[in-house]
Length: 428
Image (tube, rainbow, N blue to C red; front, side, top):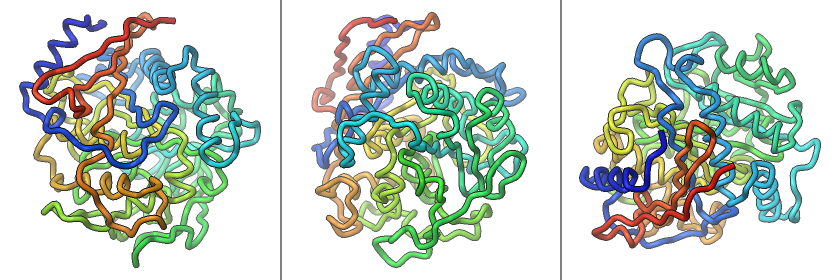
């Protein structure tokens, strides 16, 4: 059911009464925003997207409305670019990315490869598991977008997680509709290809024991889509877009065997080196990512287990967040993800100063250029929290309303009052 403008205003007022971090303080912008609309983050929310009642498995078709999720992704792509059609939006995304990467204002060219990095950290084999991983329905929707309005051939698309397994629920759903799409995981077999790694491909800014090999899938790809999850995480506080890139490196499936140098931040608020800045700055990881997506259909306060806690804060009101976030700016989208998580769960494990890597990355004069600023450099404030978030409310019949919403962006207009600007209804 669509929110009216009055209902939306009331939900913002209710959320403000929670004194969540979404409404705390004003931040001075730093860094350089990226994207067709610089720094824009889209937030699509539709309560009809997921309806799991805690029985059975969260990932089944009965608990996930593919048509609704498809509409949310479509609306997000268009909202990210201010285009009227999905095809025009993808054209704008490809042209912007190529123009800013020295390839002229060119669209997608046949033969260029696109890799989708899913977050499958909770898999243990090729079977299906109920612990929270990337939504098969959301990944399918992204593949539909690429092969449809994006005009990318199936054979040029790879879905991968180099450090884990591609589970049956994800493989079967996509392979059944798109048999030409390639799947790459750590072990291969059962229709999956085993990951191969280019050695010593990651020149960390400091001496590091982290895996330095990089999956040849991302090395050979022209574009990367980073499909992260909205979750809390021990040590790093959160796991969002930046940490998802760790899974493209030469690490073990058993996390106990992996080094995690530069993952833990200083809880006292002081600056520290973050490996995530090196991942975001790498030419084949953050610099190759054309689209950052955060799967917030369920969300979780921790890295393990199935979804377990419904969200109390408005506008979710004791239901699943049923949300999808998109951006072309990784710092902006991770900052928004961070604010959502800490607003719902202010006392997440290891959350104090977990936004250290936002400041470290934003502080670089040429955002993500690793050599331009020493590792660990920080600055006061966080650039993305001065952004406005394009909020998309998707209606079941396919129409949607969007509004520039300051409720999650910490803009100056939020100092003591709520501010919403609604350009009006747009439909197709």
